[in-house]
Image (cartoon, rainbow, N blue to C red; front, side, top):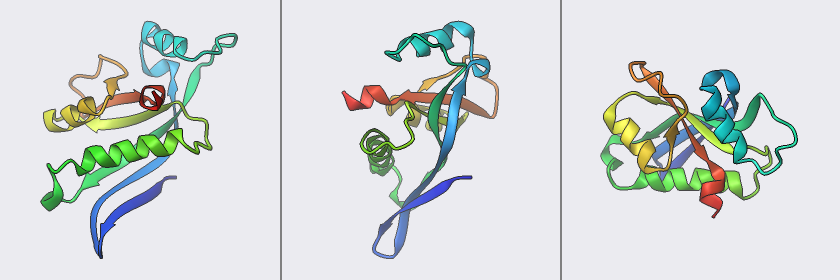
Length: 136
């Protein structure tokens, strides 16, 4: 269901993440929010009920390596991988971020935005990143 990658320093794992195919579906957000996302796509002749995305399922940095910028550099590498040689045609990265200030702040600093505002009290918050932003 997902592919897992690890970043090593010698024999030590310092970070890891997993990705899988996903989509941003119309029913996951408000109609106006989904319409705004659709308008970012240049070919608007056909409206889709979902748009291709890649989902980051797990994303972790070893505790002794945290707060050194490794997470943000790894996130940039993931974005790069899905822009250059993107064989799946995805346009967005999505993540179910734990609804904790530190986690939300990390994703926000890395360009992610909330897909919906109706889940402020949930355990996780669905966030997305538009890969076109990174390619510029």
